[in-house]
Length: 351
Image (tube, rainbow, N blue to C red; front, side, top):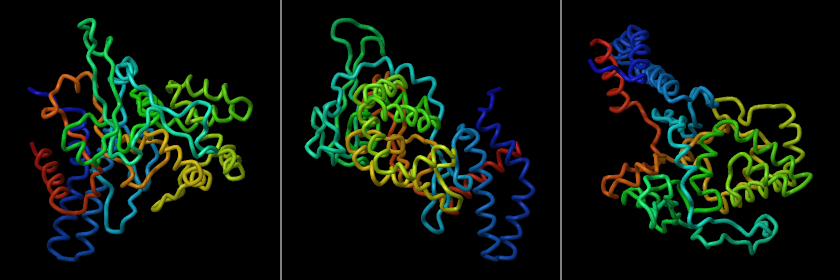
């Protein structure tokens, strides 16, 4: 007999334990025909499924806003029921073993926060819709991927949706930059919710010596190009937001306020407005545009749906066969998808 997956087992156990409550709520809402009861049933059933899926996807180590991995900003919408995955241990070694053939970054001596003439080398179309990975087989031997394999980064000039429709190997939304390498992606995946704390330590070293700060970021695992723009970012934050961020760091407070809006803490908001735009333009990759979570809860429409897969497995597929990378999913309202999920779960629990 085929065994149930851990996700299916946890979902069935959770639905079974609350089956009577769900059925009673459904009968009452239908019989009475009261929209308020129907709305409450919609909310309760959605939250039950959301909690189960959050647990199965390993979101326990990440902050949530009222139980959701992102901030639901639009009235009447619900938390997306398909949160990003957070366990990438199986592909991180592959990401680190591949060689980038065209590193992208600003000149180490040119700080884009203080010099408007700074540019990425090689130059990138800053209005690009997606950063695309193009795998390159070794020319001198027949080693299996990832040994001796390399890859090239290319900014796709069309939209993100067009890139996904063409089944291109999209690694993040927007143009490529200094942090677009798969090596830097591995750092974002591995550090997870701990990256803000680790980067703060490296940024503090920058108050003493810039080289030590960059070496610290490299010690986390970042490429030299990405480590450099991270240092410039922390330097700008320290300059513009020191009065807000010094007490915030010492207090150890959450980067987000209370639900339901979960606003950014003043320090994080200052960094977002003062240092964020240039960082995003030069770094290329951020966690949210790569489909990854961080310890800072972001609005749902900022967490892009990007399917991060094993590059070697992806390299063996023809473009028409490759798994699609999907754009941000809209928040799910009480309609057929949620009703279908509830009904399916109930039917499964009866077998």
